[in-house]
Length: 99
Image 1: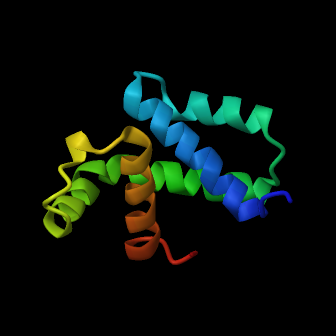
Image 2 (image 1 turned 120 degrees about the vertical axis):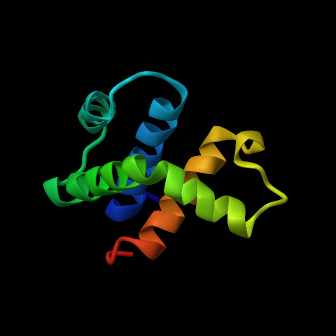
């Protein structure tokens, strides 16, 4: 069974956020590579772009909110993939109106 397009867009956004969290790679370059590797409509590519460029500038604020509500889970001790999933979820629920 294949993924729904919005789910694929989220997966691509997660890949980009994960890679840029662990490296100095530019998010626009990483996104371009991921989109070249994955078939995605313009609409869903834009959705992935919105997630990436919505989450990245707000990482510190999102991390502060996460730390406030999950003090027993310090973000520096959470796996990078999990950290970015939580950031994306918080951003989509709190900021984006497109969940």
